[in-house]
Every structure is written in structure tokens, then in C-alpha cells.
Image (cartoon, rainbow, N blue to C red; front, side, top):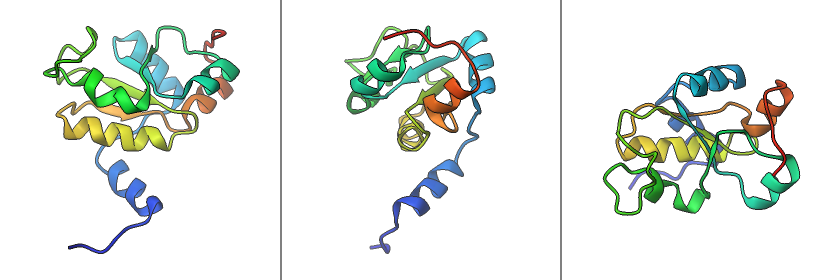
Length: 129
């Protein structure tokens, strides 16, 4: 059995497996057809608002909803080639979620560096919840 790792080391390891995007890159990707997936919990969405066009999927349902071969997939989960940008509040939980999607074969999954807060700070569109 390997030695346990802390969360900081785990994040470093999983983030090394893909290229993260900043807020402007995520916006451009969405305009080009990428799926933005907001995994923030409801209270944060109600407090801070929503990214127009982003798909809201609770973190505990993410893999079931985005697995293109899954029986509980969303209609948007059409292919393992789908570009997915996972968004949490500050860009931590989304990194682990993106790594999990990679494990399911969604090789173009990534996450937003700085999360929703970076999106909002960049002045990108936000709608009331």
C-alpha cells in the first residue's frame, strides 16, 4: 500500500493530468461549444448567482450525469470527446471532479482556476439564481 497523501499533494497530482483554464478561456470555450458545469451547492448559487448557460449538476451526481454510457446521463452527455469545464466556488473541488471525469474517459474535462469567484471577478456574465 502506498503512503497517504495530503489534499495539497493530491490536488497537485490530479492537476498535472490536464490543463486548467482561466475565466476568459472558460468563457471562450463555452462560446465554442464546451459544456460549463456548475457543481456549487445551492446556497452558493443562490447567494452569488449563476453563469448563464452553465449546466447545474450537484457534485454527488456529476459522474452519473456526465458518463456518456451511464443509465442516468443527461442529454448533454453525448460523447467522451465532450469538452467539459467544471466550476466550483474557488477552484478546488472542481479539480477533483475533473480528475474523476477523466477516469470515466472524458479526456477533455478540465476545471476553472479560481472557480466561480474568478469568473465573477473577471466581469463575465452572472445571472441571479
